[in-house]
Length: 215
Image (tube, rainbow, N blue to C red; front, top):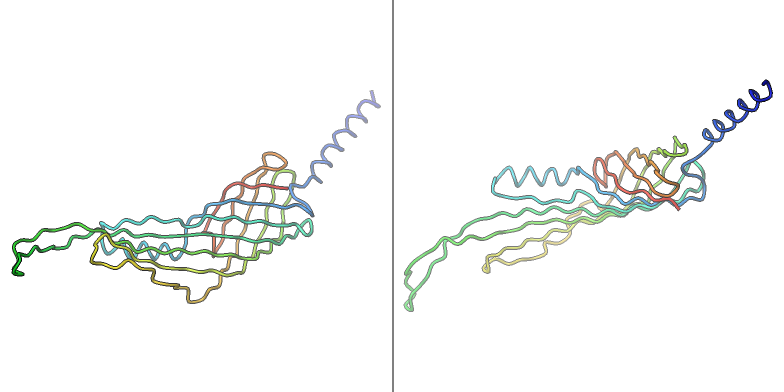
C-alpha cells in the first residue's frame, strides 16, 4: 500500500512538473500572426472631419490588416517584421445644376444632376519589432513589443462628374516613421495553431487580433 501511494505521488508530481515546464514558444520557433485591427487616430479624425460636416457622406475604412512574423532568438526574446495596410474613403453625394443651350447659346432649361465625389487615403507600413515574452506556458504566450519602421500615406480624389478631374493627390506623410508599443498574447489550441491579440499605441490599431501560427 505504501509503495502504491509513493508511486502515485511520484507520478502526480512528475506530471505537474512537466506541465509547469512546458512552453508554448521557445528558442528557434517562428511565429506568424495574421490580424485585423480597430482604432487609428487618422481614421478617427477623418471620420469626424467629414461625417460631421455632411450627414449624407459615407465613410468606409480599414483601420488595419496586417501580417507579422517573429523569430525566437531566445526563449524570452524575439525579433521580427510587421506589415500593415490601412485605408479610409469618404463618398460625398451632391447635386449640381446642369444647363442646356440652344444653337445660339441661350439657356433653354436646367436640371439638378446627382454626382458623387470621393476622397480617399491609403497607408502601408513596415516595422522591425522586438518582443519580450514574459509569460509562457503550454498554451499561452504573453509578450511586450516595440516596433519601429517606415510608413507611407497617399491620397486620391475622384468624381462621377465628367467636368471634375480625378487625380492622385500625392504622398501626405509628413514624418514617415511607423511606431508601435504594445502588449500581446497568443493562445494555442494545438501545437501549431492558435489566436493572437495585441493592445497598444501606433501602427496596427489600438487593438488587433487574428490567427496565430507556430513553426
